[in-house]
Image 1: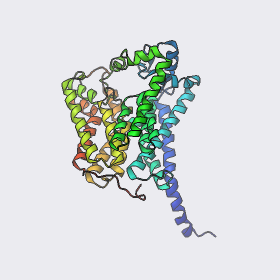
Image 2: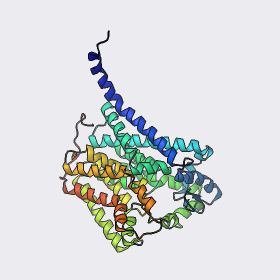
Image 3: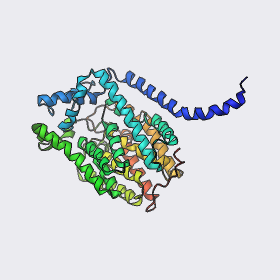
Image 4: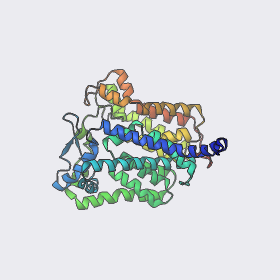
Length: 412
């Protein structure tokens, strides 16, 4: 006869060990159902552009052709350098449903890996196989899977999660050569290049050089292999007129500082003095945080990348995956017990988990209309206003040379 009173306590540790993985599995399964239901024909509009770009590259029409989004008459152009289109050539050989599933799985793996590395940076726990750290990463991944930037990245089939994990890995790894990953991400989209500031802040000049090499080499190879289209991208202005080519900058899906200010002004503020003053203010706030928290590697990761997401003209929601290290730092960093950090983290999670952006997208009359009611303009500026508030709060509550000093047993 089995004594239940003696068996129950033994089962509890097993349950605690299995719980995060069970929750993560359920969260992934629920996301798969969500994407299948909401994304007709495995929508993934941006992934369709990437796959089509390999054909456009061969035809010589890379920066002239467009792909339909599935929403009205809106069509999406290719905005990346030619080498990125070449990389997607093997993906074009597969039936699109298989490509969609594989790409989504790759994005999920990138999210989990980046969360694990971010927790390692924030807590100071370098042993990635530590069970406590792994369980914590599972809990975080299950929740972060549902924040708006990640949802939109998976729905659109964007590369943001892959660029994100490349940057986090390049910062986390002690070997300078690992910064090549940051360079490759920057050669895809320029915004990840802000992470080179992280390496510079922590006096890693060799890593900065490796990052610059990772940036230059693919562009040089692409220029050698596709000189005409590389020239069109770099020299003839295809990269500079991205805003005009995409259009719809006014849409609430664009959470950049420029878009937020334009919706208040009722017209595109462009690069005018008002935007410049706001950009300088935001940059000064970021610089103050980097200086006052210069001993904290996690802060040096999220501050430059969040700043870049705010300052680029097309700061789509999926590009704000750079908020993830900031969220982890607020909850697990040195100020995790402070009232201001707890309040900010709760506000961020409430906003990012809510369908606010999706609702605003349904309400807005057009992607091309800047003039909005005040409440819509305020709601559409939430990311930028939140970033400014967070930077100011961290700067005010910082002490110079205050770094992350968390013991190995404090990862949960």
